[in-house]
Length: 184
Length: 184
Length: 184
Image (cartoon, rainbow over all chains, first blue to last red; front, side, top):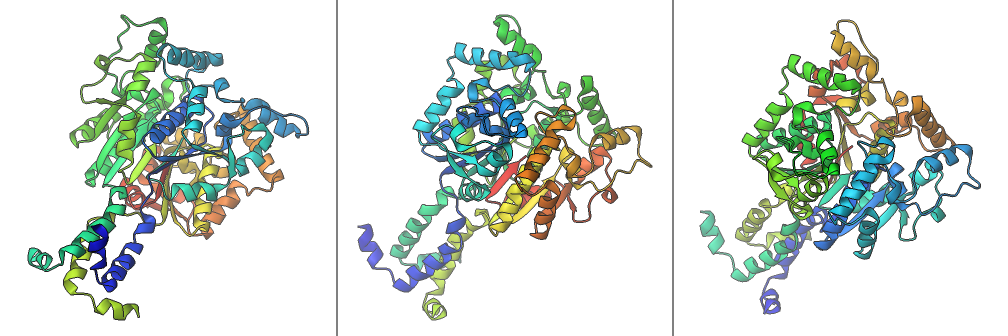
């Protein structure tokens, strides 16, 4: 039926409509969410994963771009061999994986972080590692910022396998076609 | 006049245009601003309310989604009765209402916060409580994140009356149709 | 050729298409990125300039709106004469220019900041002052928030020349027509 209707339209009109739509269509966002996760704090990382899994559950495409302290979320292990003194310092001071991160507030020697995790468990909220695994299974795309890796002396072998590498152009490419972009 | 012009158009063309527009129209944002307020710092909360009242004054729809430490902005009173030890700890360490919040920098025993408030008063900038009241009167929508309330043991009775409750889907529903989304 | 095709179309149809597009076109974003830089931390300021120069290199229009502690990035010099005691306090505690900023983490008496700068130099990443100069040359628009200047007692003479002044309406005007808006 639709095809029948379409064939009746003057090709000149179709061309005209195509031209007019071409002016705006490339700037209309896709059903997509893009986040920069800059912070290495447990609570902010948690917020980003709650948003990521929520958006994926709603059928949105999700990219998380990890940069600076945020890269902690992707660290599988810490290699010290072959690193310069400064690289070692950065390596030791950025925790590996999510479960070891501090909280942005109330972080008295890790009590805040322990309390938050304990409360989440009691309330049966998914833990940060569970959320990360869920996000991965739901197709959330994890990108590690290569410039941050370089500056902080982090190699790809230290990161979890699910991650791809990218620069600021990768982030902007995804963000420019997103309905929601957040810096966390 | 407009109606007269419209009736002249071939219904097949109208249908074709409708179909073509339906491909992009649902992803074109409304005149709307959505914010996640994650931080409980006075200065960041202040920034969110300045943006909210500014956007409302420009005729935009505004939603603020309060999560984690940001929930402090909505606390009317602190109930300790019936709370677990950990819930009490969270309750005591998150100030009630905006006027008691710390500043993110220079917060030497509250001096930074006092100074900022004193400077705002001198310069006749609206205080944080005035901004909150203004935002409410201008129709800004305040949403408390139910997951955060649950994890931190905050009940609805502890929150101001103007607030509605919502989850990540509520936030994403508003953000996906917003021209501006911010994580503060 | 295109003109020839266009002249064949019934003006009533053109008018109808114009009307239909006018419903959505004003809300379709331009190829633009707008940031609020609220933080005065070296690492966050760095992230904003990496995004700004990256976006400009990709042909996007970029505005950075500096507010609160973020204003440090624009400070050329600190004037104490004629300031009130509180204004002097703010002036002394907000560093002038980017090179003197602290890092958000690991800032043990400036060691974190020194280390980050030293690592960036070793890895031949542009320094923060180079990035700022690059951004300026690439046409990135720098706006200082007048309300923050007022509250913190900063005058225009204390800011670098490249900056223009604006309020929340300036920010929202740019952000509302941006594909990407970030609060940093």
